[in-house]
Length: 187
Image (cartoon, rainbow, N blue to C red):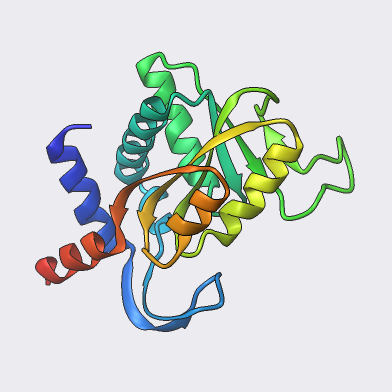
């Protein structure tokens, strides 16, 4: 990813996805800021740039497939596999449901998942890693060789340690502090 594209994605996240107010995160922790990556990922430019960034990390990790929990991982996965197509890279995508579907094929993992392939579990923003670890458990149980966790934004609140204990290498595009600093510079 070009330096200018990385900066453009950072500024887009800071402008579209960063909010300062008291709220509760998925982890249950309280926070005085929130980064809603979906607001950026559902813009054409945001999806394009995020896809390029995640594809770069996936290629460096040498993974053949990536995915994570619905709904956080859905736009990230979609953006990455679209980028893979643009670059002629063979990369599969999938997502993990919170519970097994009760109709149709009754699957917990949907999409182009294949057991035995080197896999990354992903999310848009990771705090403690709880949702990503939930996806990890499902994917490993289904036969995925999960080696990496990848995210757009790493909040720096315990996920790195949790992933190390789970035997994962952890990669991210930005830290929350980078987003916060960019948001302050745009004011």
